[in-house]
Image (tube, rainbow, N blue to C red; front, side, top):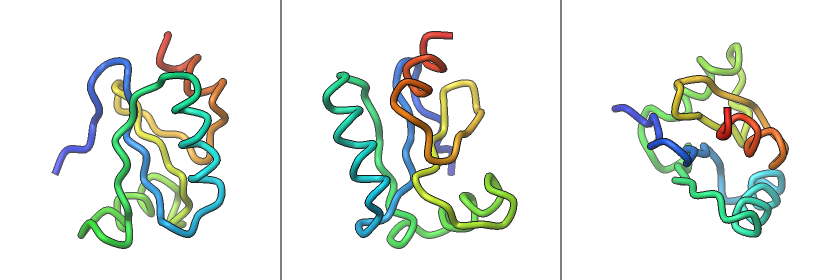
Amino acid sequence: MDFTPENGTITMFSTTWCGYCNRLKKQLDAQGIGYTEINIEEVEGTAELVEQLNGGNQTVPTVLFPDGTAATNPSVAEVKSRLAA
């Protein structure tokens, strides 16, 4: 399954209990940045994908950018910067 987002948006892998995920979602909403949220505890295969992106760790939020790169627990400023690049 391909989770690569459309240009100008991100895919955010998260869990319901992750405080960092909730904070990033609020910041993205406030900045008007579009995102698709994928709960790694509910979508089969995504926990393993997050592990691959994070050297074996299931760290969330993990953000996937349109260019195929990823970031772990990025700031909203980093997300904005990388989407503008």
